[in-house]
Length: 349
Picture (spheres, rainbow, N blue to C red):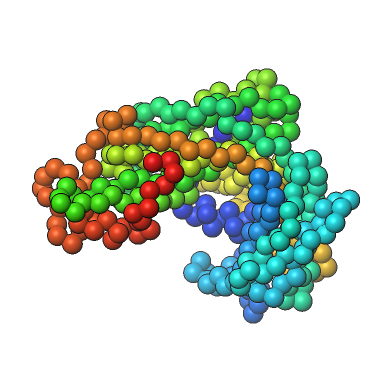
């Protein structure tokens, strides 16, 4: 089993879009200053929804620096071919976003993505839809963990580690998993006559990555695999609802994440190989010098809700409770001031 679980810097989310794939090439720093910029594709065909979404953007090349603006690319011809079956045209639902209108995606069948845009033609390698692997059991443990704070210093804080226990099909052979998560926490206003409760969604896994190669497990049993760390703070004081995803991915996508981990595991040794660009599984079918950056991801997901209460983690006091009292004009008097907060109670509460 290869388990990657680190506090990867926020740049991982950029690399995930810019350098998707499995093959590694040495970066040519003498990049051309192309007026059209670099085409970036984020494409996913999902078994559960039997639908596909393709996002196409255009970004400045490397010579433009890290602050290049990404713009949606409209007017593309986007198609998904089922190998041995029909070809579906995707519809542009908003600028740069293309979606299927018909059901597509069956386990064991292979698919290929085709894109014609800006006078160029791109295609993906064939990818076979994996089997969906459901969660068998989810639990958590609480412990201390060391983090680098915003000043770059190491600090220790209580965390909860979310774990999955699952029996994989085929004894794990040919099974590759990735985990994703999001969360919603309960925020209580200061106790008063008109106090209210808000529910606040947040992204919690951007800097965390866990992948699993099922063939390396003992008889295909995934036992208490940690895949998410969450700091214990006042967000967990009342109720916190996790939405967890156990995602079956293809071997090509697994190899991509392995390559990403290898890049971030660099020690700075002078004998290490030079930094590398991680190629995706989408390429220019005519002009190989005008390549594309992105991944055609073919996945099968299982999702689950998991709730932790403040009493479980020993953190029962919310941010608006106790002394000193909160300042007037703070979210404690109007919790809708918190970004994305809502009064609408989610199902898992």
